[in-house]
Length: 383
Image 1 (cartoon, one colour):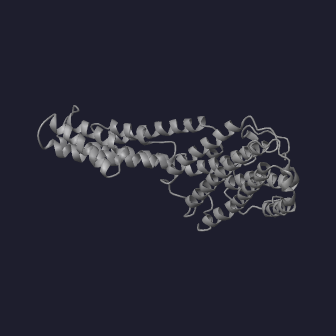
Image 2 (cartoon, rainbow, N blue to C red):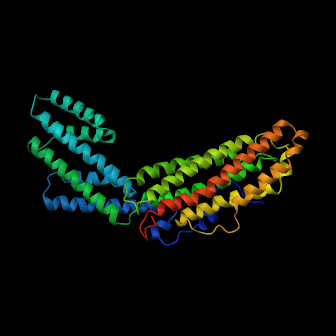
Image 3 (cartoon, helix red, strand yellow):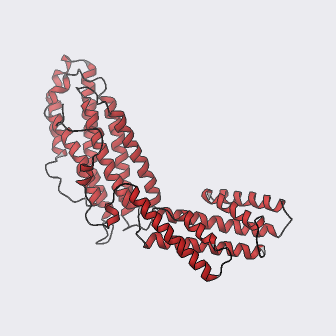
């Protein structure tokens, strides 16, 4: 069983160009990390300048803390900025409250050590792991850093300065060239389906043929893309969605991608040591036709994800007919099984099983994602 001759080493620029997004701003069409880093640098500089100007205008003595906060919490994605802002705000509030409370009792170094311990324990007990260090820093500033004014005024000013920096960072992140993780996740999922399609092709090259030399590299690329998408999903959960079903659809697509990756792993095990098999040759051309349709379906689903439209006609891809035709052929050649080794027959049936699972999963992807997006109001089918 052979595919048409083509490359199987990686996703090319042509693959991604064929999935050009419909609409979207200029930032959505940029590829690579360098443009995003340049945009992030511009936004950070802008937010820092605004924070410093506002702090001076308000007469904040240590207004530079607002600038420091902006630099710390402003991230490339809106959702990541929200998460960092939340962690810093909570850590500052906990540290300010604990630091001021312990400044009223005992003296250095015992009040500082106890305040640091209590602030850390509070954050841990409240499940605020990422706020622990920020709470400790605030305790240090209130109790032992050089200062002018009472501990009370320092605590209040620190909270105000941090909240000012957070407000400005959130405003700039949301209003100035906003980069949303859910948009990058959509692109990442489309790329993941493309990579899974290439990996699928490479796996089946080893069925009744020589194994693909780049199989390990392709597997690693798929796994790396999946990890990156998982991180983007965590960030996207903190962003306002473009409709009630958007995050649900993205979550479903990630689940389907995981299921397909597991099925490909099982298929990879099934085709090992099959280069001398002859039983499977009897399943042609039905086996090859279903495999070609599955490969095309990976690319088709990637296009649906990239355009965020799941009601597109699938053209000549007919997975249901391919499954049925292969099942009929399997039944027709069943009586010849005694003429071949048991290993050959079992491998052929295992490949048939995994191809069927892949085809049915790919058929379900569009329907389930479309149902999730159906919960949106008219016009909300974009992210």
